[in-house]
Length: 386
Image 1: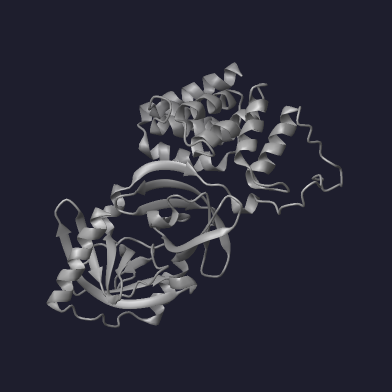
Image 2: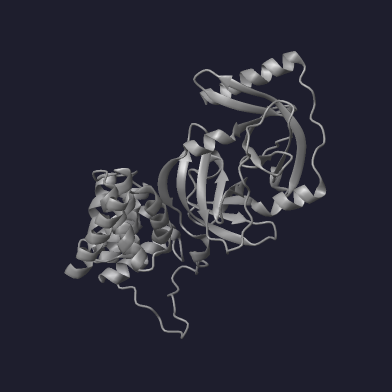
């Protein structure tokens, strides 16, 4: 908020100086090169209803999207719509910086995704720039302008002020130079002054902090069934939902949590998971730990999250092992321990957890060889004991 206020002061200064309106730059072939790397981000609530929209772009590698924290940072479920209309789940947040309003996320997109590259030199006043985003729900909107100022504000860092229009919905769009490279990310606009807009400069991207958080998948949300109708398999067999049976309790808890055929009630779901977890049912332990980790119903409780996820992880539940490793990496409810975090991630990945496999690639670059060897040894010892 303080950064926004500081940059607003820059806007006022430019207005007093008589800022020059943006000019047209670029060419059609440059736009065609950039557009396939931009995405529309749609955010959903836990029931699968769309609640917000913003823009983003694939950056530096396939499947990694950069956008604003205020677009995606608090989302439970989100999807990315690419230039040809296809949509893919945003499966996790891997890095963030709330102060600079930045988030890096992983998209479950196919190989061959086009991505943008960072500029070789920072933006400077007079440089032509463009913004490609989805303002007010209209996709593939191109705005051209130029950099008006790059101001270093004491205690607040740099702000790029530019004249490429950034209407509501453009948040998270790339700010592109004449070579098609990213120099910043569109993040704010001056109300009533379309030629005065704010972008976070590229150099701030490197300051993102690793903070893994898994998102639910919209594609896994089954259509709600009418209340009272039992769920059936593809062969038509009615599946049991005995509330006295741990598996039935978990099944019913999931329905209450997601509102599938029954009114959505996270407290009822939490109660059902706990009843099954108290009987030692590993899947219930995972769901209970997940709810405490995500802050469902009762708010976040790292200690309880670690307690139940640890039990499920020791039982071999891959999703629990992945999330438990994340707790160790961030020091949430357990001591921060990169080796232990990597050990659980290795185990989860070996059991086919796709998110763990992606995180493992990050950890392989982050940890030293000695730490990696120790994590692998611990994982092997754990498997042998099982």
